[in-house]
Length: 80
Image (cartoon, rainbow, N blue to C red; front, side, top):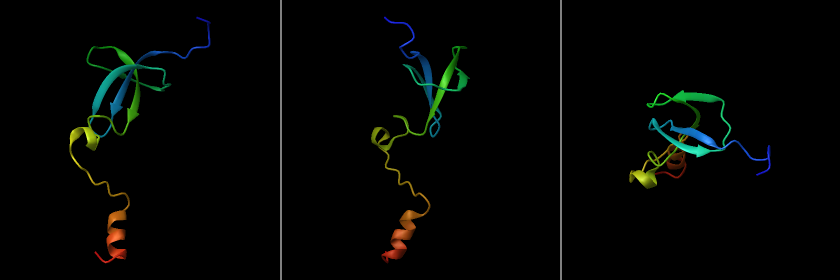
């Protein structure tokens, strides 16, 4: 392989903030934070809002996300 043309491929922790679920996988993503896992090693961490542990499709739970009262505005506007 040619030198200095490939991204840094390493183990990275992806941390689902909504369910506090962490998993280690390999990635080339650039991060600025580190976290220490149960094995005692320090890994770069990338924080995500949704993973398979919190997404309604995978959990089977339908969650209505009401952003800034949009559902209430709709009901008020159309009389329901």
